[in-house]
Amino acid sequence: MSKVNLSLLVMVLFSCLGTTEVDARLWRDKTGAYSIEADLIGFDETTVIIQRANKELGSCEITRLSDADREFLKSKEASEIHDSNLEKTQSWKLLSGLQLIGKVVDYAKRDVTLQRRRGNLYVNNSLFANLPAVYQKMLMAVLQEEEGVSIGNIGELNKWVLSLRGEPREYHLEGVVMEFENGDEYSIPFTMFVKRDRDLLAGGFDEWLEHHDDEIKEDEVPSFTDPNEHQIRLQSLAATYHRDQQVNQQIALMNLQLQQVQAGLTSAWEVTLYPVRGNTLPPRWVVVYARDSLIATNVAIQKNPGFVAGPIRRLN
Image (cartoon, rainbow, N blue to C red; front, top):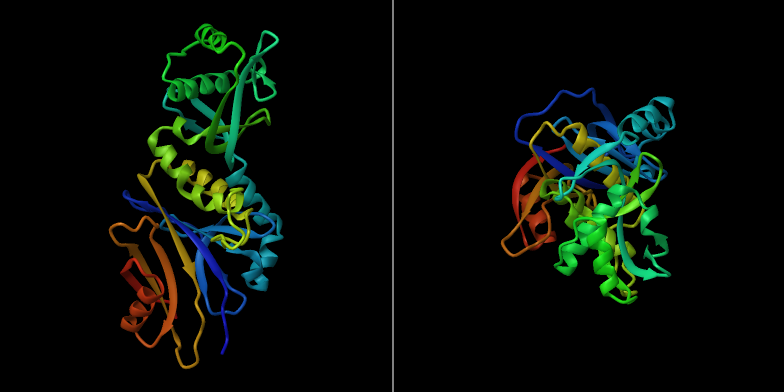
């Protein structure tokens, strides 16, 4: 009995206006049991991100790929593709109307403390006056939301800070890290983005927390084994989102897991599963091996309670 452990974490961008043609290459896992036609988007030391012609994004551990695919990722061509996709700046819109120009590089969960010390306003240990103008405005927007006060300019901010009489104010912010064109990195809360951008960026945050939340218990097992995978997935998602932003997109997180291959079961079936009402988990894909589609569907549902079966297709 052999076992296939290829794990493909799939984020799907469903296009309502059609898809574009891509010059896809054929990727194979090292067992030869699974293959997929897709474009390279980006990669790091452990994970590669690929995209199908219909805009589906998938991630796979590089160690699970065939020798030919691993060699390709070492090539100059692969590096150039990576850079052309992930090194471009992006434009993100805030609720205040501000446009942030930079690159989304990671998720963030940080505590921000504002306090007046020695006549100056500090954000953590940085002078507020030394922060980029766009970040100053963003912080004022955070204060308006958190404190319920009107802070639209520096004068109103100073007046409010003086009313604290030196007492610090601490805020717990969850969002993304953006790298601006000058190389500086700042955390931007999800709540600051317009809904379309916020929904896309926040899609994988809960899973990222499983590797970064200090309150995780020792006996809890995260969904992903490599915490760095979230970073390259987020960067690739942000890059393709802007590259294809002329298309009306929605995002759904999906999970493609090649299950155990059992003796005598020769057909691989890819089953799409959708959560039932009350199940907050995202849709997912599973690949099972069975004699026919009916058995494959039943196996997929049994292994994934709380889901109903959608489309199914034969892989081999």
